Image 1 (cartoon, helix red, strand yellow):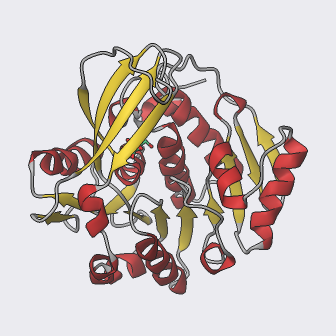
Image 2: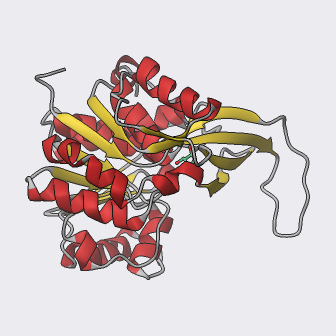
Image 3: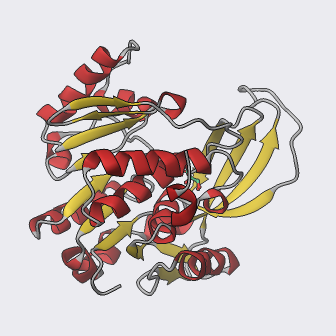
Amino acid sequence: MADKKKIVVVGSLNMDAVINVENIPRAGETVMGSDVEKVPGGKGANQAYAAGKLGGNVTMLGVVGDDEDGKTLVDSLRQEAGVETQWILRDSDAGTGTAYIYVQSDGNNCIVVSPGANHRCDLKYVKEQEKQLRECDILLTQFEIPMETVAYALKTAKKMGNQIILNPAPAPGILTPELLKYVDILTPNETELEIITGRKWDAGLEDLEQMCKLLLDKGVGCVIVTLGEEGCFLAGKEFKHFPAYKAEAVDTTAAGDTFSGALAVMLAEKKTMEEAIEFAMKASAITVQRKGAQLSIPDRTEVEQYG
Ligand code: RIB
């Protein structure tokens, strides 16, 4: 691992409580669902898991409770994906974060996160991890932990010239240049793009390009918008649409996480952006065809043989 570029993921770890339903209920509606299944998840942990399983040299920073779910999440990252977990804090004052996920029959989902110990991934904790942030080559982070933690991590890693990938999920609102100026690669989906730009997407690639330009003007290096079965759109020095690989979706949970994790691994291996995007799209096409967050994330061989 020593010769491999180091990817540090700062983010959330959640135990996912998953219920399959025919259709996601509307407000005020009650529906019957399947038994509850517990699956390791959390956007941060999923991205670290994906990057590790796909061959990256990955360290995870985050906080779990000192409980059974926390232990399962840390073990899953270390044993199944080879992620360095020694810096993950086990906090006895908070329970491990939980995500309640409804997956409907077409594979789409809706998620509510009860953050628990992820709230403890605060400034004090992240400052204690300064060495990890300074010594990484690529920093990958999201917004399921406090905003000030994300801002500090970006700033610290960027000061050392490290590459920054920000997956703006869940989207916190319009993102400002104060934060975006640290970001080399931003990976929103179309809904997150609308929230962080404060603009509705009128459909069509030209409009998408205009929305991405708003972010480029605020200092982001490049934007990759993930568009589900429409593939993805790269906006940076060039603008390019990448069509999706064929996939019968059964559960889209962690598809975006797989994409960001896979992208980080490819960039760590000095692949071109186009090669990295193709690989990441294949990886997430496999993820949507399986159920569960980390359970659905493929290994390197599967991705290389896909499509
Ligand atoms: O991106 C999918 C993840 O979002 C789930 O695993 C869940 O934990 C929520 O954080």
